Length: 234
Image 1 (spheres, rainbow, N blue to C red):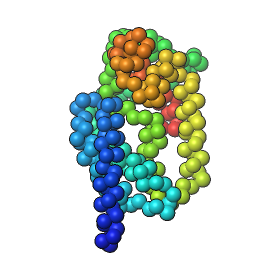
Image 2 (image 1 turned 135 degrees about the vertical axis):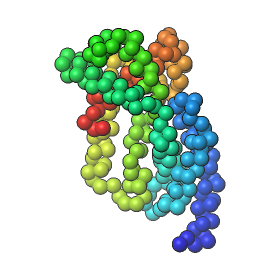
Image 3 (image 1 turned 180 degrees about the horizontal axis):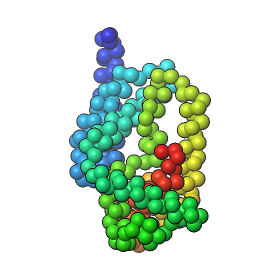
């Protein structure tokens, strides 16, 4: 049972952090297909903010904005997952591509090339690029947000993270950083421009003097290549 003071405090937190919900919604919508409406993300985010206002415990050390941001993004991502617009065939093809990349790289001991991946899949190069284009319509979130999935928000406020939790989280980050560094130079550059500099595909295309569709292919291939190399963690 909440006291009047607690209810009033929660209401103040919600009102003062409503702009945070809109900022996060617009940031995520820029990385998602047009079929995902900003208003839907905002609605889901407000539910996350409401939940954060009820569960936040200032004695646990994390600021409310940090905690709320995780809850808001998590709520938006859950909403996107529930309305997943990507057909199952696209998910299957993404897994097949990741498997083909792993097979080639394990055998050759180097980065798998486009034509090799297509051959391993029994596809023409155009068919392979078409699969990559389809997979690029999937959800692309920042690597920080990948680390926020699961129960990390709960760890911030409900209890102190266990030593094994922190060790695994740090090992994952280190391994991910190593695998990003090992990517082909162009894929690594596209990832950096997209996730760190937050350029859109068209802007990256102008920087690298290639088409927007080619940037989409490179970004999708980099993502799938990382998944294939991080399969043990996933």
